[in-house]
Image (cartoon, rainbow, N blue to C red):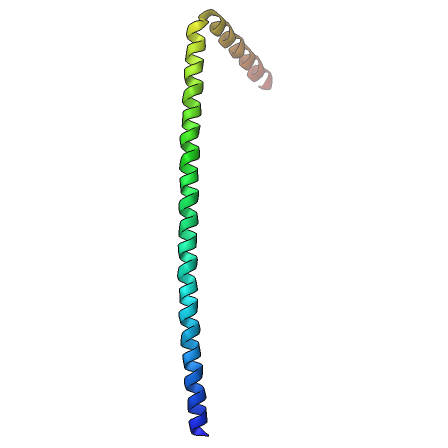
Length: 93
């Protein structure tokens, strides 16, 4: 029976080694997939930030053009908004 037990133990060891190798391989695949997903998310984030910056720059340019085209109207709007804010803040205190 010793020979049978020895053979069984060797088979178990070999199966354990195969399972360990397979698990390590799956772990490596998972790490690669997570890394690729993180890269895609970073890329999308960078694109979103760049698009946001372009949108803000366009809005800023339009605002500057509007003020340059209509300086008196812009001044009156700014005074009105300032007065509204001042009135609102004074009421809160």
